[in-house]
Length: 128
Image 1 (cartoon, rainbow, N blue to C red):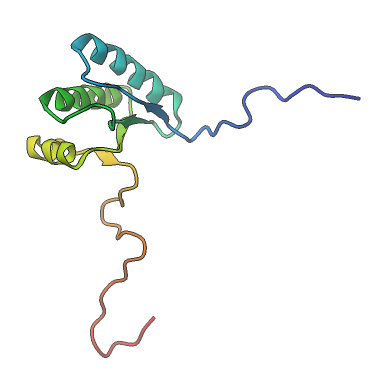
Image 2 (image 1 turned 90 degrees about the vertical axis):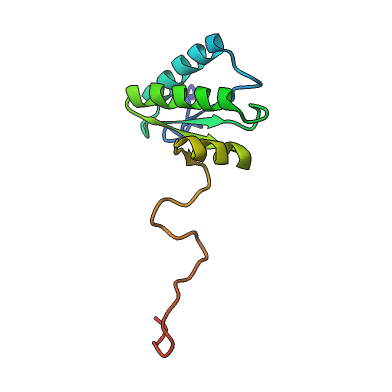
């Protein structure tokens, strides 16, 4: 007896968010298409997150800030959010300067110390 393959894609993790990779300077028309892609990715992911790989955007500028603000707005309207992958330190500084905060892959969550960091204890206190 032989059986056919199981239905669906068994190697796909349903909790893994989709990754969007915008390349080069993105025009306003390109931004509209990316916003549609972000909305679709957020709706398709149970975690309601779309990952945007910003490593290929080129030098950071207000065009990149505008694009990321539009993508975040599109994701929020779809009930989710975006997470940045591989942001340049100067892009992160520019986003901070204009008041935009984004979750970054590999970054410790707020109020949680990074792994491997121990809290300081007072001298004389026993180790736990």
